[in-house]
Structures are given as structure tokens and as C-alpha cells.
Length: 633
Image 1 (spheres, rainbow, N blue to C red):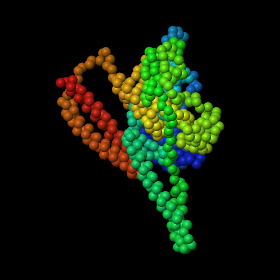
Image 2: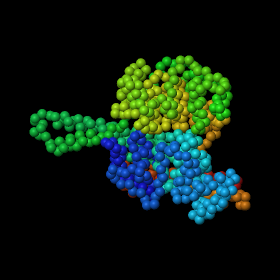
Image 3: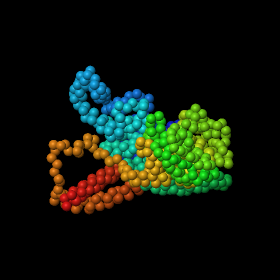
Image 4: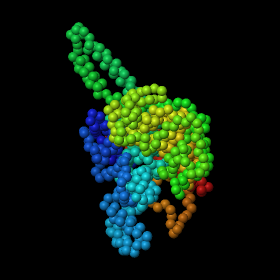
């Protein structure tokens, strides 16, 4: 059943069309990933769906009674309420009652006699409004997202605050959940917890992300916003990339043919007196229409042009650590750490938020002296440092001044380039060059910092969380640059795909000051340590208790005759479902599929979703019966 539909939706800011008569249909239980360049209007589209933004034209239809919850890209940082108070607000009317009960319970636990009577009164009120189930939902989601109920929001990291706001959205059990860059500033463990929470969510999800692993793990469909047009792509991110390349090639060919035909018509219209006497008025009108069409054509936004001047090579040994220790007062961050990093090594650094990744970088680079042990830097080092706090950028100064300090030119290696030309390579329009940095978006600030550090020669590149706020295409271009960079790389990142594609070894902060060293990227570390993703949570809104009580009689189950027949028939059923799924996937992948009527498109997508669910159930049933069969025999 459709939850909502956009029809001929249009929205523009100034002369820039963000939505140009787009159509979108969201079905129950769909998990749609919305991708697109920074600034194309993805967040605006979510604001339209949540009714925070009105359309210039077109309609938004939402099924009666549908509840929508939204997690914004920016989370509050100045609230002094507890995480419990923040999460429980997602329950609406009963939130105040449950929040008081939580705090009074804590007072009772601390020995307050006065609070005991108040607790009894609150219990009666909760029973009266039948809110115990709601209270249990809060406790469940706090546990699932590993949140400390009594922590104060303003004292928590950005990642913890983001998880708390997600919990607030989930506890309300909306029919549609909107997530704008939910993985920003989350560590890998938190991202995996978020994945599990969304997989266990029974409603539909529309999320914006640059995390390609998250896309492949969650999305049932990818939709792209490009130059005001919304296009749907079934399948994985890799399948989207192939389809998008084919579309762009076809578009370029069609544009070349159109431009050639227009040029021929322009030659014809400028012919001499004889031609004017025989001029076909219909042809003239067609030419005028072609001119208007060419003027209205929205060219694809250019790509960021990334290049890095390496300069001379560093010494063979870039740095060595020998039994290095580092502590902040009584807090041990690094313990007995030894390593040797050679020229050309590409080292990733992984660890939970607050574990000391940035501190480890500073110790390795000599910015912080080890408490004990030794750090020895190599010779001829030219360091380029991307810091996640972007302290190298002065928010009050302009883009130009941050890059070139009031100069019209920037020195790139041994060449001088005009600052506007150089910034254009990083997708800054000339009118943005004199804008204060504080007016830039997060993605624009990251691009400016990349422009700043890439203007210097470097043979040691240090990147501390460079992927936050960057769109996927810029991420892939950054990957290409790092892959071709022949110097040494130190990279802190929570982007699993980015790590896998750029590093050859990994340092992992494992707790209690221990730093483990592993060959390969994130996936290799998982394999070597036996790390696994969190178990997918049940999609039920009210999961049943699965652990038997001591009073429940447990009997060994046996494979019945009916079970045996079902086990024998399941492979054929799975094969039939897979064949039908493959057939529908091919149909949906056809570029003309979305030109059909909306009813046909909706019915086909619904059938594809149901097939996927049936296949998953069949696989689970087959595994269960096969396991039971092996126990019986």
C-alpha cells in the first residue's frame, strides 16, 4: 500500500530548480536511499515530505493517519536534558509522565523515602493510561542503541546525540522514517547498531547517506536527485553506478546530435537573400523552439578535480614508535605501542568515538610527546594535515582569504594559478569566493579544506575524518587520488568502503590503551578478528520473548513427516521464487519501466518487495528444518 506520493512536484530557490516536476511513490516497508550531489536539494525533498517546506507547484499526497518522523542532519548540542528525557519525547502525551517516573525511580534507588510515595502515585497514573508498554519501548530502544539514559545531552559527543535523536524517532513507531545523513560523526560500532535498528524497524525508511556500505546493507531501492529530476534504480550501489554511466553516455550522445542539428539550422537561418525568400516559416518556429530547449538544458555539474603535488620523496622510514605510552592525567590512551611506518604505507586508524584516534595521530606526528617510550620521525617529511574540526579554516574570513590570504593567485607546487580558477576545480562558483566560510555547508567546508591542503606539496598525507559531509561522487574521486598517491597515508575514518579501498594496513584502538595492528582494510580486520555485524533485529514492533522461563517445559523437537516433506519441497520453491525475482529485476531495470502508469509501477515494486520477503522466509525455514533434521539424525 502506498504511504505517500509526489506528483509533478516543483521547488526552486531563486533560479535554481531543486525539484522539476518530479514523481515519487513510497510503499510500506520500503527502504529508499536518496543520493545526489551536495546542494542538489536532497534535504529540501525530505523537508517537503515532512511538511516543513511547501512545494512551488505539484501535489504531495499522504495516506490518512500516516505518522512521519524525521532525523535532521544537525542535532541539538545545547540542551541540558537527559538522554531518557530526549528519547521519551517521541511518545507524545505520556512522555512527561514516564520522564517523571524515571527520575523518581532513580531517587528511590538512592534511598529517598519522600520519593517512594510519589513513585507509587506515578505507577497508578501509568497504569491508568496503560503506558507500561510505552515505557518498555523506551528501555528497549535505549538498550538497542547502547545509550546511557541518564547522560546529559550537552555533555555527550555528536555521535551519541545523533543516536539519541534516532531513538526518539524510532520509539514513536512512525509509518515513515526520514533520516538525513544519519552516519555523520558516528563510529563504526554505532553505525552497525544503527543498521540493526533500521533493519528491525517495521515501517518505511527514506534516508540520505554517503556511506556506500550502509546503502548496500539497507536500501531496497536507490533514488537519485540530479538537476531537479528524480530517478529510481533497483538493486545495489554497483548496479546503480552501471545504470547511471549508461544514462550519462546516452545523454551525451543525444546532446551532441541535438547540438549538431541546431548548428545546421543556425547556418541555414543566416543564409543570404535567396534563402530568406524561400524560408519555411515552420522551420523558423522549430529553430526558435530548439534555441529555447538548448537554453533550458541543465548541464551536469562538473566534477571536483583533485590533484596533489608530492614533491620530493621522504626517507624510507617515515616514523617509528617504540613502546610508546600516552595518558591524559589518569586516563590511559596508548599503551606499549610499537610500529614502523615506511614510505608508501597506507595506514587506516579505527576505533570508537573518544577512544583516542586523533590523539594517536598527534603522538605519531610529534604534536604530542609520549608519556613514555619513543616516537622517531623520518627525514624530508612534508606533511599535509586534514583535521576533522577544520581548525585550519577561519570562519570569519572569506573562502579566498582562507586559501590565498588576500592574494589573487595560489601557488600549486611550482605553478601559480588564479584563485577563482583553482576553486572552480573544487566546485566553488565565482560568486562564492568572497563568501565567509561560516556561511558554507559542511560539504563545502570540507572541499575548501581539501583545496587548502592539496595546494601544498606533501609526501605524508594525514586525513582525520575527511569523508563527513562529502557526496558519494567526491568520495570516489578522493579514493582515486589516494590510490594513485605514491607518498605515505595516515587515515582516520568510519567509512568502511573508503577504508577498504584506500588502506593496506589498519591500526585499531581496542580499549585499555591497546593498539592492534592488522594487514588490510576494515573487512580484512573483521575477518582476522572474527568481528561480525550485529544480528539483524526482528522487524516486529512488539518482539515476543524468545528465552523460555524456568517453569516452561522444554522438549527436544523432532522432524515430523510434514516437516520432512516441506524440507524436500523447499529447494524447488526457492528456485521458483528466485527465477521470478530475477525476471522482475530485469523488468524494473529497463529504462522504460518508470514510463508506465503509476499503478503498474507500484504493483510491480510491491510484488518485488513481497518476493524478497517470501525468499527470506523460505531461506530461514530451510535453515531451521535442515538444522532440525541434522539433530534428529
